[in-house]
Length: 191
Image 1 (cartoon, rainbow, N blue to C red):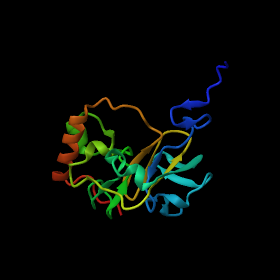
Image 2: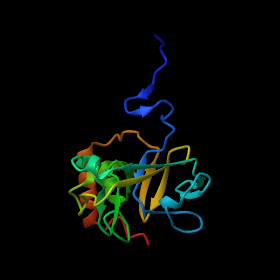
Image 3: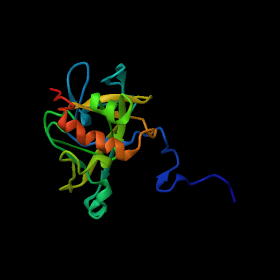
């Protein structure tokens, strides 16, 4: 018997590993590029995205399609609906629940003791109108990688890519800061 694995991890064929981009953006999500916003589904390897640290090339793209029969009873993968202004977005949008967003501003600094925190959207559901929304058809999510962790803008929302590090701030404190940001008028609407 050989030690060669057939699968590198459960449910993924050998070769589908950590370099594959995590699917996080739903179709129609506009990402910032030097030439203006572009829908995530139109991006390809080599295209340039605007990040907080400057323009960076997309190094990998991926698409995940979950048939309706597979997501019907798996609420944990349903998209999160983000109402206008909840995270600085000028229009309502939907993102994957695992998408990490960047919260910053004077309220975050006062409550959390740091300038910014990154948190998965699923952890903010129930605050400022964020809800889990049942999809109406097959669930399609687009992922991309820039080769290194980066922060990109998706319709006014700052989203972390390739960044799975845990925050040093407790989740309940982050949720409190997010709730208090509303009273402080943060974040401002990004148009």
